[in-house]
Every structure is written in C-alpha cells, then in structure tokens.
Length: 493
Ligand code: HEM
Image (cartoon, rainbow, N blue to C red; front, side):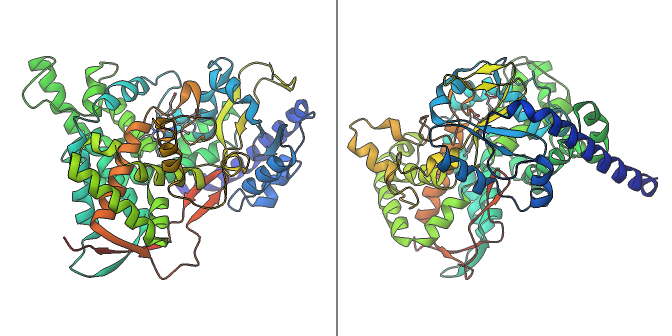
C-alpha cells in the first residue's frame, strides 16, 4: 500500500508546492511599499537557498538592519514575506491584543500546532499554570531540581578520577536539562526513563521538519497532508504508553480521595490534572509533551564559552563558592549568583535562539505609528539578533563579555533590571509584553543550577575540534552545533 502511495504523494506535494507558492506570490503585491532585502521573489528564495537548509536569512536581516536603520524592510521566506519592524514599534507589538497582532497565529503558522502537537489554538490553559503554580513552586521544589541535575551529571558524564572525557555538549546538556525539567513536569521515576527522555528530546527536530512541509500547503489542504507527513499519533501512543499508567494511578487517587492524599505528587502533570481542564490520557500526554518542547532549551552554548576560557570558569567558581557557603544550594542562593546569571544572559544576547524575535501575524489592516500600512495577514517580526549586536545599545557588541550584565547590575544599586529574567526592549530572548515567556523563571533556575554545578564539579575545555563553529544558523533559528565537542574532567573534592 505504502509503495503505491509514495509517487502520488510526492507528485501531489510538488504540485501543491508550486500552486501554493505562486498563489502566495501573487498575493504579496500589497507589500510593494516595503523595501525587500535579499531575493525579491519567494520562489527565487527557495531555489537559491535549496529549501532553507542553506539559508541567508541572517545575512539578509542584518543587511536590512544596517541599511534601514530607522525604517522597516521585508525578507522572503519560502511561503510568505516577513516584515522586519524597527525598534520604535516594539511597544506597539508588545501591547497588542491577539485580535490585532497575534502571537498564537504566528506560532501556529510556523509549528502547525494542531497537527504536530494536537493542541488547538484556543486551548492554552497550561500558560497560566506556568505563570502561577510552576513559578511559585520553584523555591519549594528547588532541592529536587538540583538533585536531578547532580544525578544526571554523574550518570551521563560518568567520569573516573583525573580522566578527561570528550562529550557531545549539545546531547549531554539536553539530556541533563530534560531530566531536570521532567522532574518538575512528571516527577520520579518517569523523568529518568530513557524512552520518555528520548521521545521529548527528539521532538523539536521532528516537529520542525513536519511543520516545514505543512507550511508549503494552503490551509485547506493541511489536515489531509498532515495525515501523511506528521507522526502525531505515533508520538502520542508512545507518550501514552509511558505517561498513561502514571495518569491512571493519579486519577484513581483523585476519585477515591478527592483533592488531597498522602504523598500526592507536586508536579506540572498534577497541577494540570487538578485544574480539571482535561482528563483523557491522550490530551494530558500531549500537553506534557508540548511543555517539554517549550521547556528544554539547553545551556550548551554557555558550555562552549566556558570551555573556551578557563578564566571565566574560575570567576564563576569563586562566586558560587562564596554564595553556597552562606546560603547553601537554595533558590535564595541562586538569586545571589550575579555572575552565573550574567554569563547565561550574555550567552542569550550573543547567540540566542533565533535571528528574529516577537513574531506576530497581523489580524487586521494596521497603520504603524510612522504611517506604514501593514495589510491583514502579514507576518511581522523584529530583527532580534541584529538588535542584540547593535553598538548603539551594547558596547563591544561582537565580543562575548560574560560579566557585562553583572557589571551593569553592580553599577546600579539595586540592579534587578539586568538580571536574566528581566524583560527589556534591549534583549528580546524571552520576548516582550503580553506573551513574554512565562517559563523564564523556571528556565533560569535550571540553567543557572546546571552552570553553577558544572563549574564547581568539573574542569571544562574545548575538544580537539576548535575549528568547528559552536552554533549554526538554520533559517531563522540559531542552534548549537550538535557535532561540537567539549572535554570534561572531574575536579578534586
Ligand atoms: C532559555 C529558555 C527559554 C527561552 C529562551 C524562551 C523563549 C521564549 C520566547 C522568545 C517566547 C515568545 C515571546 C514573545 O514572542 O513575546 C516564549 C513563549 C513561551 N514560553 Fe518560553 N522560553 C524558554 C523556556 C521556557 C520554559 C522552560 C517554558 C515552560 C515551562 C516555556 C514556555 C513558554 C510558553 C508557554 C510560551 C507562550 C506564552 C504565551 O502564549 O503567551 N518557555 N518563550
């Protein structure tokens, strides 16, 4: 059956691709008043860039940023134009309501949430649980998060006395972050289950690949095409097989004992179940899988910077030693680690996760403050990476200065404005305004604890592959190079 289907499917995909691109190409003329940077037609952008695998997005966006310092420009994506707005429009975008500039519609366009995660656009109740219960629980559950990080480092690095070991930084940090996050999401023992971790760690790649194909099709065809190109049902059954028994057991307790029982778990899954928004194994499993997608960004880029400069590691170590001797390994202690915080924030500034920030879709015709007309349906974003490297905002923007934010904090008396979780128009890593990342307090807790634990317990240096870039730019995404290596050695107790 499969072999019969394949040629038709491929032919269908190709035909639809051409139709869809041409269709969109014709529709783009209402953006003629906005200058183009890079390829001037969407199809050209595709053929020249070989399907975005080798992509010039970064070059074009930087070029546009330099050329139109106080204006806006657009760059071609395979299926649509992205209008890059100027910094002066940040406030407008940050305050805009969903029916004006939509974050969810933009996210849905890039990830096709219903077909890749099984989530409906209007079904995001987990966001308020992240904002409230998860963030509030960080102090109480801090010991668990740290315990998981220590256990994961011991297991995955598995170092003998005085031995240097070469490690794939991306893979290992992803595994450690996954375990720490899942300790909070689903608790023990599932957070250590290799199959559960594998499912969640491989998810971003699978979802991004599937969504990339779906984006080629007009929306009326997407549900049909999704049946062939996405593996939502495979992921869901694999997830249900692992998480289902945990959910069932908790449902039995809830039925028999109500809202409270002895040793009731205190984790994200339970908070979702307590909210009674959904009870089916499938929907709860999909919810937890989607939280994993948002939540397990890694600290591997920070690790590369650490490995490149042992001087930085020593400065961090000195700080952690002093703080831990006074406060122990606690959430309060973590808040005193200004250098650790600054190191990670500088990594976000220097590399970040994306060339573009605050992606939005215009839900109605809009006239910006400078008079520019933006037609309904336009995709908008800010050139975040270029803004983070602007010397009008940051001194020596192209130099990684690990303690630049700690220095800023120290200069200002109170100094919380420059901590990692602070939101500012100068750094868009966690967004700005209504959709500011609600998971940033949790992410900062995990990442800071990982970095602090690693500098205290290990010596780190670059592997014998210094020539390899530590990050790769794939389309708009900035991803740590999975082949770059770091060497670890256990420090003397
Ligand atoms: C270093 C780690 C992280 C980074 C860099 C990051 C970054 C972001 C960014 C840029 C946005 C969009 C903001 C906007 O466009 O205005 C966002 C939204 C979001 N993030 Fe994060 N995030 C991180 C960790 C997490 C974690 C750990 C969670 C969950 C526990 C999470 C959950 C979410 C959710 C649910 C949204 C959507 C918010 C909404 O719908 O309003 N993120 N994140």
